[in-house]
Length: 415
Ligand SMILES: *[C@@H]1O[C@H](CO)[C@@H](O)[C@H](O)[C@H]1NC(C)=O
Ligand SMILES: *[C@@H]1O[C@H](CO)[C@@H](O)[C@H](O)[C@H]1NC(C)=O
Ligand SMILES: *[C@@H]1O[C@H](CO)[C@@H](O)[C@H](O)[C@H]1NC(C)=O
Ligand SMILES: *[C@@H]1O[C@H](CO)[C@@H](O)[C@H](O)[C@H]1NC(C)=O
Image 1 (tube, helix red, strand yellow):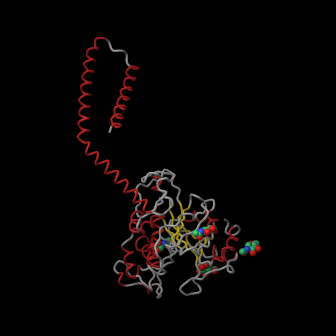
Image 2 (image 1 turned 90 degrees about the vertical axis):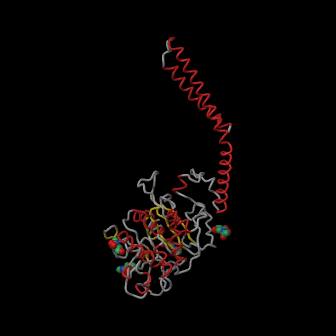
Image 3 (image 1 turned 135 degrees about the horizontal axis):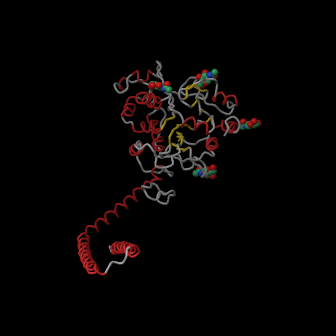
């Protein structure tokens, strides 16, 4: 308490000094006649000051026990908070750069960086990620970024191709990797866009709602960075077929999100509708589409926030209904139909039939093949106008396709 009083005292005397300085410098010396009057005033002021100080001392003495408790209490809270975050595994939180030393640092809040060992549960994460600012202008220089959400079981065989794709475009993209919980992505080079980008994950089994959970986890982690504007889901067998500037311009300037959405009367589509979903989801509102989406920030936040339709799909869309092919297309049709292009930007070949699409290895990857994916004469709509550029990414490729694709990257793909 002593330093506090000293501080108040010295501040007060500083203020006094200033006033004296002003008075001495700017005002003419008062005439003798007013001297007695001034002295009286001075005495009165001194008496008032004495009473004030006495009051302050009594007040301090009375509140001494109270402030003791307060200090103790806040110290305990701070220690608890430290234990909480330390135990959850945010080791670099306090010595982070970029003004990130305070838990409420603005930089840290709008642009959280790795390591991703945040201790939030899915419920906590989705709640936090669903928040959107209501002020239209950003109080910082915001450059929109494209978030690439890699959904994989384990290794990323095409990481070298993606690294080439991202090279030189730092600040315009961010990468998030959701792998099986026991898998550790081994990226030795700290300059790799994949370094330290693995997010806390959960178990995923093909065709179940856990796949939707993983997608929401990727979206939610990416939403924490307020600069992320577009969100692309890609798999370990997925590759880019245009260079980064083309992909970036295409997505950031698109008025629509790209989620395939259709309803045809076949067992694998309309046949998967469960009448128990009514009246929330009616038969004519049922939609199907490829899992590999591209979403704007607004739609991504709404999907992370949705609990109503998610609960219905969790309960009533079980094999042979696959939530990853129906939940997002149906949800968007119900809530944001006009904001969806209803087509995917990720090419895939289903022409061979069966439950899985065709997979292409070394022998298939020729210049002509990749050229046909980029543009085979098919036209699609982009911002209401026809274009030949319909697909930005393609799947599925076997790891053996890496060498020929790297070969094509400098020529045809141009990156
Ligand atoms: C990670 O990869 C590097 C080189 O690519 C290798 O030397 C290292 O042993 C790997 N670490 C693990 C844990 O697999
Ligand atoms: C996509 O489908 C919705 C209906 O769900 C429709 O309102 C919208 O206009 C379609 N989008 C485009 C770009 O045609
Ligand atoms: C172009 O590709 C699309 C999508 O794979 C396919 O449906 C279409 O038949 C192809 N067109 C030609 C002319 O090959
Ligand atoms: C890469 O391209 C060169 C020349 O175009 C060719 O000779 C070589 O076989 C290609 N390598 C692979 C792995 O496709």
